[in-house]
Length: 69
Picture 1 (cartoon, helix red, strand yellow):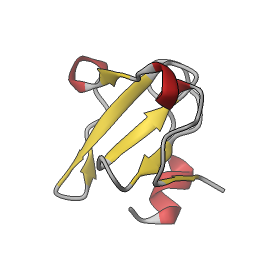
Picture 2: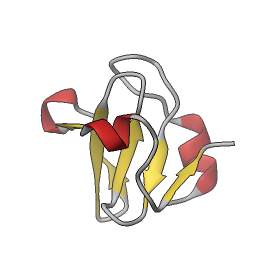
Picture 3: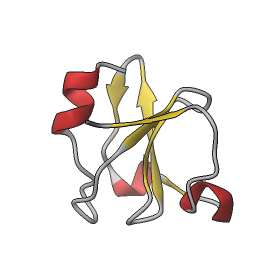
Picture 4: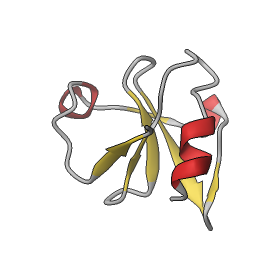
């Protein structure tokens, strides 16, 4: 995921920061508890296409994430 693009994006539900999870290919928002898919390098920022984070992900215990700086 391009770090410049990641730094510009925010969660459409909460306005919170996003983190890219390389393992799942998703953008995670801990504030809203949603994970947005990245398909062919394009973030799909539609809440209806997002999945709910599990407890470990929501608490930041998942591996492979990088936060926007």
